[in-house]
Every structure is written in structure tokens, then in C-alpha cells.
Length: 243
Image 1 (cartoon, rainbow, N blue to C red):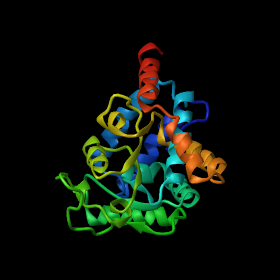
Image 2: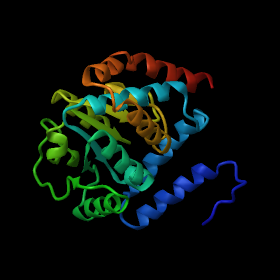
Image 3: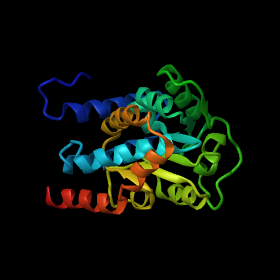
Image 4: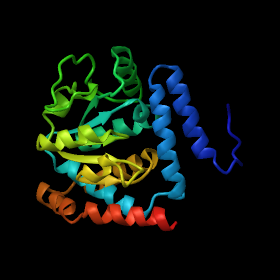
């Protein structure tokens, strides 16, 4: 289906169709469609735009990935369906490794998501065919992490469930989240939360990373240290309540 250019919700409807197409190809789980609808509701309340707080968070997040010794980006079906090319670019700019990690996990879906990322320009994709639970205290299929995430000191998670965010932090990792709901457990537990739609947040992160990559690690850590995630989340919550 082609959405008319004149339609006031064209961007939102186009994203829906990208996800339903990816569902039919076995990339997105059926529950992922429900999760997208929940995020879409928050995006609607935010005016489907990127606020300055999200821009500040994207800058801090890029600085954190660049300052990390072993950064990683965790990819699920929805993020691959919506932003595969941008994920690959961000990985190259920041030196992050890519790893598929799924709650509704099957080997077939892992392979399909890997192939989507590779077709979009990614170099190497980890996380396919992992059989052992490797994240302590996590009982869901997300516990099956590969070396990219296990060895990482900073992990970007997108459209994530909160229990793994907590466990990754328990392992001593810094966690960056992209989450349209500032009240979610993921948003509240992450070190840096970008309250924005992934299709806007990742291009902003790429732009910030390109601007920041000439800085030394101490300068990058200063950028991260100046960011207050709790304040940022409160301001985004206020925007939703008062918008």
C-alpha cells in the first residue's frame, strides 16, 4: 500500500507498513507490532518530533559509545526493520559491534535479522545461534548473549525490555536506551535514555558521533558526565503531560 504524500500521518503509516512487511518476512515478531503501537502512542503525544532533550541525550550517547573500549549495539527485529542502514553506519562511526538479541527468539529470526543488517551494509553480526544463557540472573531468551555484548563496556539497546537493561548494568556495563516512554523500566534504569523515535534518534546519533569522534576519551567522558539522565527524563515526562 502507498500512503498519499498529502496524508497528515504519512510518516507514521509508512513505519507501520515497514513493520508489517518485516513481519511477513519473518523479521519482526507478532508481539513486536503491539510494542510498536505502544511506542507510537507516546510519539503522538510528543508531536512526532525530536525535542531538544532528545538531541542532548543523543549527543551524550554518541560520546559514550566513542569513549568506550568495547562498545556494542543490540539489535532486535523492530530496530532492524526500521533502521538497519542507520545501525550499520552508527556501528562503523563509533567502532561498535552489532549483535542480534531477541526476546521471541528463533534461529530463523536471528538469521533473517542478520541478513537484513548485512544487506544494509553491516560488516559483521554477532548473536546468531547462541545456545547458552550467559547473562547472570536473566531467565528470558535475551540471556543468550554473544561476545559482542558480553565483552562490551557500553551497550546501546533499542526498543528494549527493562529486565535485561538492569542485568547488563549489574554486569558493570553502561547502557544507552532509545525508548519513547520515559516512564518505562528501561528508560529509568539506563545511564542515558533517548526519548525519541528510533528513526529520528539514530540519524542524530550518527551526526553527533561524526562531530565528536576527533575528541580524546577524557573529553568524551566530560560530555557524558555533563548529561543528567534523571533531569532529562523528567523534562520529557513533563512535555508529554503538558503537551
